[in-house]
Length: 248
Image 1 (spheres, rainbow, N blue to C red):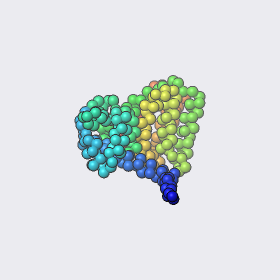
Image 2 (image 1 turned 120 degrees about the horizontal axis):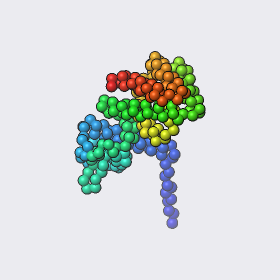
Image 3 (image 1 turned 90 degrees about the vertical axis):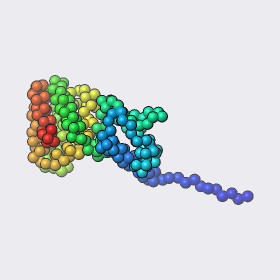
Image 4 (image 1 turned 135 degrees about the vertical axis):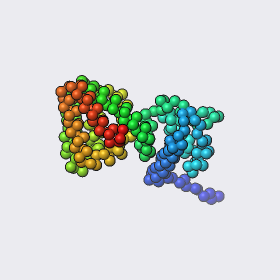
């Protein structure tokens, strides 16, 4: 007896990568749509959200995609799923992970003016203290690293091979490293990820870039001199430029 052998079908690596990419993009679009719905609808803490089925129908996706989105948002403590009850916005907003700010940026979601003002206010508090700590704790290696960033910044203003927006990020992160407190760096990093697009826009203007690096040099000088108060005052003025830019 002759029996036909059915060969198994294998998905090629490229096809598998394409499928995974499409799935990730669908999940990201659905997550952005859900967060946008919640923010625009102004759900209050503890308020019940539409069911999985209703969300799947609203966004035109399978319930599996919705479950994946909900799992991520629940892990960030933005939402809460209660067995046999439903999906709720977290009843305690203060418990929501700071990573939600990063997620807003990654999903290209616009922060409300109030939340933007609050994030810059917190950044000011953290960075002013970090500048003082860096003035006390910086090493010669820290000074060499920060000084190099300042030099590269000057060069980068007129050279397209250097991104001054990235150098601004590097400058501020170098100050946090000079403070020698890893938790502090982990705390502030979401604010910088969240503000990346605004930073890129800000530093397209060469005059702004020059003014910003002029302030960097003054802060750097205070770190060299180990002048805690001057470092804090200058950092406060530096962050104040950002606040004025956004009318805060």
